[in-house]
Image 1 (cartoon, rainbow, N blue to C red):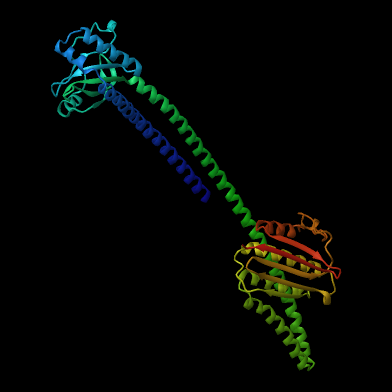
Image 2 (cartoon, rainbow, N blue to C red):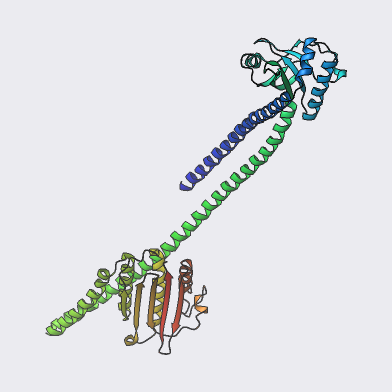
Length: 436
């Protein structure tokens, strides 16, 4: 059920990301179209202002005194036609605005071969809003895109032409075809499409990565849970074995005490009971001196196991929470090292069986050390290999996993593990885990 929910969240997130990306592409496309129109309008308007500022007003005034296609007309017309070709405009012409509603074309700015249809003073298709603005305020204007059945779709701008007295005598108008705007829009949209595809590919990669990371995380969690279960199940089996052994020992202890009392050896019976009491108190004292509950329980169970095998086990634990290491990892390290120590020590006579455990914490690292009597190690390099064991094979029991597991756990914390034996048949396993 949990996996289904995670997958559903991933799918919904993917859909939302795709919708957002498509919407972003649409909005960007619309903004680009508007921005291109405004940019071209502003650039063309600046051109109109520059041309009007240098306009031959004297020649134009002479033309206005007799508005016909005369010498003055063609002189200005040729200048406008040259400007039209240079800037790639649709039309560059002069309009007269003497009322707030309609404007009139005075000079068309077209080549002579295309002047046949043009009449001086013909009504211009400039929208009323721009005519009114120019008439009332005498400022430059820029129209929206004009859809004219005769001249097509274009954008029109105009700048006032002033005489020496500063009076407006006309407007220099420039029309830009939407084909130019569309070409720029198309180029920008193509670039924008590439960006959109890159974003879409990136989103797809992120979605796939999240999916695989989620699966990987689930597998790692499952492995960790299984490993933890194996560790605790092993400890539980050890405890159950210890309890069974204790029950057997309990019966033997009762029989000994009963026998001593029956023959009247009351003092010896008391001594026997006191020795049992000391052992119990020694085990119980572990909980009182160790701050970490998991560590306390582990050492207590190993103490019981050691007693069942007549092994003297001593512990020295520095007061610390050991919270820089996960409890499960610390249990894996110590339980495997102690189990190996118990197995090795059992090969000796009872009086020679000794194990000491050290758990120490400093400002920079943790130290876990297990020392035991018993046979020396064969090779420090070989003992850490998976499957390597000096113990005889047993049916249903996998050997050679303990130290390999310890090595892997220690490596996870960038720690170090060493195992060394002395000539006196004493083996010490030391684990150092840095905490800073």
